[in-house]
Length: 435
Image 1: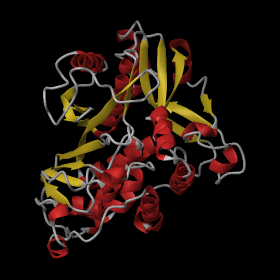
Image 2: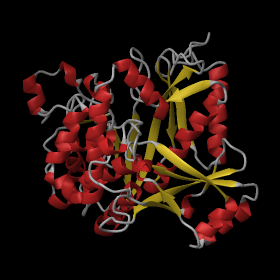
Image 3: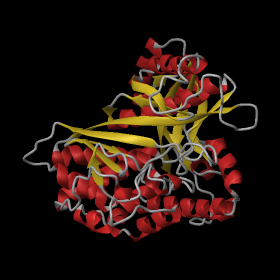
């Protein structure tokens, strides 16, 4: 109660608070609630109830998607008022991230991805004395808002990695407007640039892990909202066009306060690599996400390398890594939690780092060379393959509450089934609605 009162005291112009959550399908959802009612929610006199379809993409009728329950479940939002931020893109609005609570769960908040991340961070601190900083690289493509869903092609067109072309006129004005709004929301950027032709990237400054994921969610919505006011669609879906660039969402993770006599960087990253197939089911959580791994943008082989962007894990220093097996369809709380839980497993078991630091292009290596580097396993090439890895990984299954994991797998298997029946263009257009 004190946190929301202090926030409103400082930000007197706020009229509405967006109480937000990310569903199992990776979609941002929100209830827009007047301030007066938020105060009643904060003091416990009111609650926000949700229908169970608040946790999935509505791709089919309820009986097809809710295969794990034969009754209507009741869900609640439990706002985290410490996450309150001003919405820099909308005057009079603020946003707070919320926990999702299903009243019949075996343990309270067991089905909440955001709570899973908090639990992983608490374990890392308690068991290993380590804090985590996280930053994200947000890739997105601008599409015409005229209903054609074609890539915007202005006179000054984005045409390559870190080129100034495309950032000399209206696109630069647009990005500056986005960054100004982010600053009003207390979100700072590391840099922005053209990633490839027709694609922009905004990299966020590292923050403590939970705060960083909250910032990511608000930053993505800021980008979408400001672009739509200019009659543009900013999309972060992995396959925004059938022949254009693919979008990723790369996670940078750094460890701080590390006692090097107690914590091994090799064991930490070995835990992640050891469960790479399962982690892909959380990070590239979408039917079309695997075009990136097939095309090497997320790495076709399981391994790591210093400054090697052709593998799923890029080492930047002993305590700083970039995880490239993530895109904008992931629930970022769930993916970040899964990565940290894998790393915790590596630390606890002292998992051997059988992979060598690879600075070569994997697609140019023959089998003998790959074996020398410990690169023996390919990345999943379909979402179904990643989900099969997850289901068969008893270690990962032990980390995550049964209620959450069963729900997640059930939802995602249904998505594979339904989206697999669509044409590439039908699926592309459908994903543009959500991401």
